[in-house]
Image 1 (tube, rainbow, N blue to C red):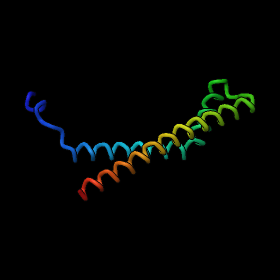
Image 2 (cartoon, rainbow, N blue to C red):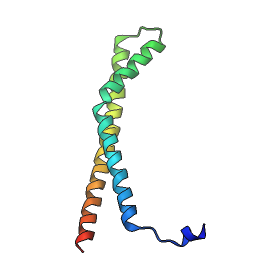
Image 3 (tube, rainbow, N blue to C red):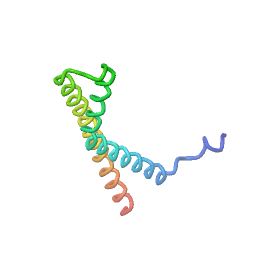
Image 4 (cartoon, rainbow, N blue to C red):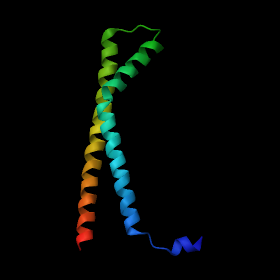
Length: 99
């Protein structure tokens, strides 16, 4: 166990791990954004089923729109932040390789 404590982390492996995580989170953000309408629709359908199979159309529309908008916002924020992070990490890696 002490053998692992004394070792310094490998910078290249750490960098690769960070980039992979950022790219995966970016893809997740894009998926949330692109599938938000489907998620909203399925949420509204599930609420209608829980309500005995019928629901006020205005309430159905409200649930569908707000759920879709929530997922769209979260997905967009996640994609933008992690996309910028991945670009910055790529630039930092490129600069480090040149030096």
